[in-house]
Amino acid sequence: MSLRGDAMKIVLFESRNRFGALEDELGALGASLVRARAPEALGKALAGAEVLVTTNRLYTPEHAAVIRAHGKNLKWIQFITSGIDNAVASGLPSGVAVTNSAGLRAFAVAEHAIALMLGLVRRLRATEKARGEQFWARDAIAPTMENLSGKHLVLVGLGAIGQEIARKAKVFDMQVTGISRASGPIAHVDRIRPRGELRAAAEEADFLLLSVIYDESTDKILSRAVIDAMKPAAYVVNIARGQLVDEAALIEALKAKKIAGAGIDVTVSEPLPAGHPFWAMPNVLLTPHLGGAGNSDEGAAFTKILLDNLRRWVAKEPLKNVVIERTP
Image (cartoon, rainbow, N blue to C red; front, side, top):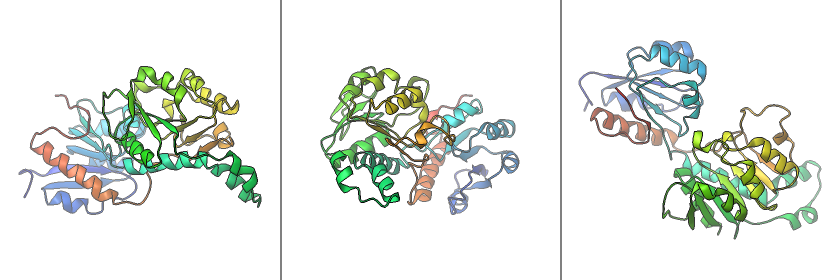
């Protein structure tokens, strides 16, 4: 059954050619889908379009200019990603409703966070270096290895990703403190403290893990003062956004061994520039912003989110995962 009499035009702007059955799904509801993969095609496709579906990574200043210039009929932008910081920085059209896909890849990002923590305490950088030298380094490395069991994880941000990290951390018998504006209680979190107590919480942390949304209120939330409060045996893990960290202060602490190390999936500048200290630091486990990657039925999961919101949109019901409300 059609959602409404006139066909709603939806533009999908993404580069990975996902969601192969989306045309059929939307067609069955009386909506038409136009795909675009280049700025020229995007501008043409946006003519008369009411809805744009895209990703934060593709929302560059160049593409933002095309969207503002040609998306005159846009009323709603649905992001495939949970983050929209690039889009906000590049310039969203005024008056348009914006929704994201918060929680869609929470399980994958949480797995990556656990992998970084395990890699740090199990000294994977050192064992890989020894492997390259064909050196059986058991006696050299084993005394320096640790376990997650019993460690205190201070988790900054208790959204979908943070809650999934907490759930997985409990499998490893970790103690979990959440830093959040939520008042709790939250499953798998032993204690919730407000953001104003982050420095005090950092003093107790074995791992300080960032999973909070980046905005003006969280810019450099991992400040020099917070880093200075951490124990020499503690680690920083960031799977959210590089701008959450005072990167210069973190580099200084790592070089001086004021903290034990860091697991980093995101950086202030991406791609990470050649010559950046993170590339060579032996106490840094670095991955190139791929925390949400992995095999899964992502297409079906996102399609479900989109179709549910589309039904709500037509029925004039509140959308899910609203980041910015539409204004007249």
